[in-house]
Image 1 (cartoon, rainbow, N blue to C red):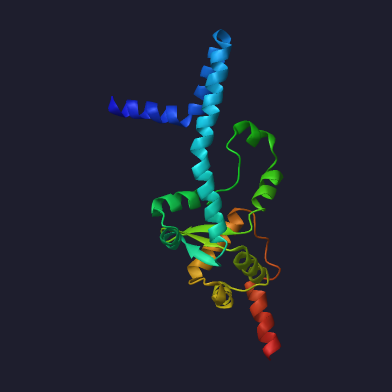
Image 2: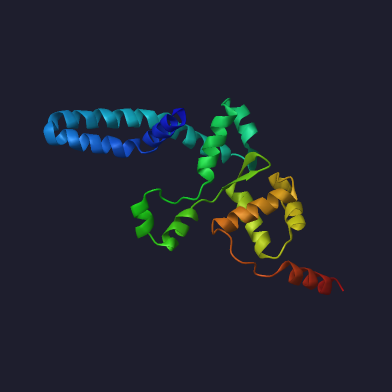
Length: 202
């Protein structure tokens, strides 16, 4: 019985906006003035609820852009915010920018969604149970090296000044870029580049 109640409230919380709109429409049929007042009050409450969240999101992005690389624990410490709160924000920022509206998802073409994702120049990766932010300059440099046929070890060596620490990070960044359609195919393969280097050194 308890589990059913929990499920019921979860459904209510998930679709509360739809229920609110439906309730306002029903009230409007009988009491138009009351419905208008409820709508105004609802808009004010929703706006006041989302302002702190939006402010933290904008502040977080602005703060992270000051670093080539920064992890969630460091951000939480420097901003004096709970780690869980920072992780939740970074998780939301790391998601593919696809609209949750079913109708829009059905109408929009894949190319439009991909184009929207491409507007993100920085990157957030989840690795070793932590979220790590990478600056636009870091990502562009890595992409350039990847396209030129550098392997993970060579990329790591070339990006020392950008504070990337392990090959595992390089692999995670590349996989995330590919997943989000933000990385083109290599201009030359790793094998071909190494053979070319070997030939030039003779």
